[in-house]
Amino acid sequence: MSDRRPAMAGRNALPAPAPGHHGFRMPAEWEPHEATWLVWPHARADWEVKTAAVEWCYADIVRHLVRGERVAIVYNDEAVRRRAERRLRQTGIDPDRIDAHVIPMNRSWIRDCGPIFVVGGAVDCPTVAATDWGFNGWARYRAWRRDDGLPRAIAGRLGMRRFEIAVATRHGARRVVLEGGSVDVNGAGLLLATEECLLHRDQARNPGLPRERLERALRHGLGIEQVLWLGGGIAGDDTHGHVDDVARFVQRDTVVAAVEPDVRDDNHAPLADNLLRLRAMRDQRGRPLRVVTVPMPRPLFFDGDRLPASYLNFYVGNAVVLVPTFNDPADRTALGILADLFPTREVVGIHAGDLILGLGAVHCVTQQQPRGRVARPDEAQERPDRPGGSH
Image 1: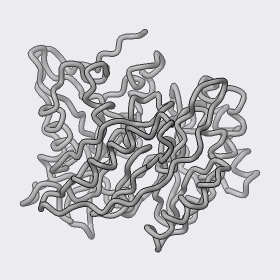
Image 2: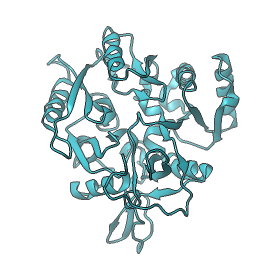
Image 3: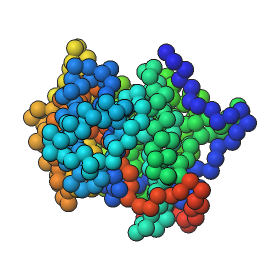
Image 4: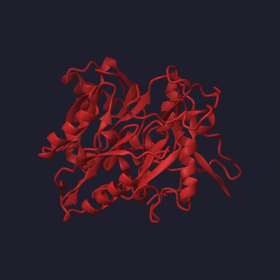
């Protein structure tokens, strides 16, 4: 296994001021987007013989997104770009409508290795910056160093201010490792995460970083006020419990939670525990959350391994909500529940039977860039009166 330690900023370095200190916050996914970013599939280690089929799934995702926002695609090299543009043309998409970026990558899971964008300033005229957290291949895979450089590369292409998120240690500043799929926010100060992913003693993302310091990094790095801790993730998830498979904000006071009624299923106990926690949680003002349950699909396996199929791995675009489906009787139920929760958007099922072989779905392969004016690298941002930014 390659070195899992996050990059060091230097033995005597101290962390730079964080986004929260400058009035930035991570917006909710349903807030207006400037663009959605994807990395076109290219690594056969992810999908093996299904790589070509997954390209058609990507084209379907792009086909729906371009109706409501710009789409930016990262291509590993020019050969991948040419192949992708053929696929796009074949599905009726003009490649000239796509913002194309050739950036060498290890894999395609931009949700986890890409920049997490934050906004600051007035709601009607926000500025947008990028946060750059460490990425170490989910503390599991060897090939990740190119992916770790993606936030820097994208911020550079956009001419955007970039914040490296780090904590001080006795050896200097150490970047905090965090994937986008491990957190979910309501844009008004609340953040969901699981203890299994970010706090478990066996996880190798941020060894030795206690809960209190990690929460402080999340508050300062994403401009949030309160972390709501769930227990664990679902069976088959190679990320050690990402929250975007088990619970998601859909409104500022509303969370959808995955449930598995079959007591014999491995997902029953952890999802039941998460549901109990959610129903006991309160926001910053002591108000309970509204919790809406969504069933899990029947278990999916490939070559004897459980796959992390979940309807909660959906993506909220400007005009659509893209929901992974699995040729399962519960597909219709999940789509109906989400359609009721997003009445102003078209809720669309994306067949993810091939995509899930890579152990991720629609949310994992997308990353939203909020709408707003790009904050330049040397631009100062005035801190608001209250944490979490104006909203």
